[in-house]
Length: 431
Image (cartoon, rainbow, N blue to C red; front, top):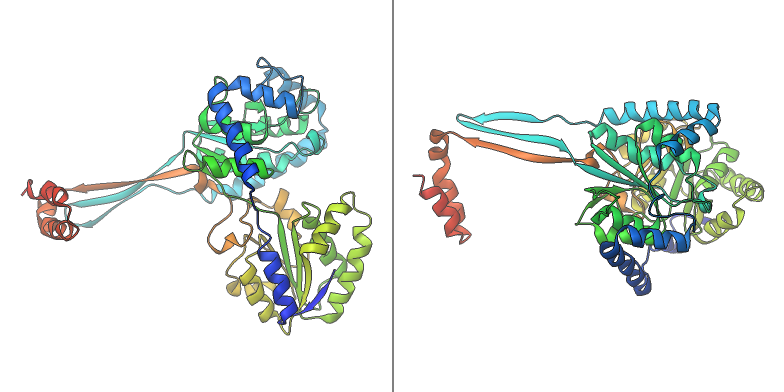
């Protein structure tokens, strides 16, 4: 892992390279995804099954596209009871966190005769996308929880989950067990862009939803980008990121392990250590090489570290925080002696992990906050997936006749300045 002195020309060039790696779409990608979407809009379930047969499993038919009650029962009976215990803890803790995000409707009487307020309502239907992950061999249970729990807490009445089947035409039992424990019973065996299209436009079996959330490959991401506006989406997510700010108190074994926890996700993932300790920098670089060689996904992690990893040696932690705010990382760990002292300085980060025993994977699975986070610098203006993604707000306004007459001339004046005479007349006619 290459070490850079920051600030320097080489360090700034590396930072630019990391920022600019982004998530690019080729015209061919766009055309392919648009074709999938158009086909699903036209042929519905027939297209869903055809693409599922072509890319995932030849065993899926229109009759088996939706997971049955028997499949749910079999899944719950086949998974390890200890897995169900861990699942229960995760569901309970994530639910408690997301309950804190709920908003209440409110009404105010700011002036005599005037009532204003805001109604808060859940969307009618939501779609949760869960990637196939190595043909279903590495089930992304956490994606079920992170998408489904805020929707449930928001009060969404219809939740549909889409996930690619395994080669045998079944859904991994761990995925189904997680869905069942959350009360999600509409699970469909389809993935990629065609699954997103089915959620956005509906088919005979798949309900048309109002919001689609969940991670996926470039086709899933591009499909969400295309249907955004027809439905709401969580975000356009890029490759995973972690930035660790550490001082001399940090353990290089911990730091290296946490960097690799994100590097193994994707060859375009970014893992950066920012430290004011040369000793820690050098030790971490050495330890990381040893740990990397033992990883099951070492080839992916190696590409990530070589192309988009860095150790930035800074003169002080404050400089490191300025650099972090510039990068606006998805995950930011503060492995320093007094991490809470720096919270006010952190302006841009998807999630903040404080202390030596708060590795990023705690947030991925069980801590409580959502792990669907802004990437590619978008933490400068966007936030984690939350209950807010599944609600809508309606403004409430009432005027008595006296209050109307008291403010009418101001409205007429403003409308006429804008040249909107019909607006003005709507008020004048009541005078």
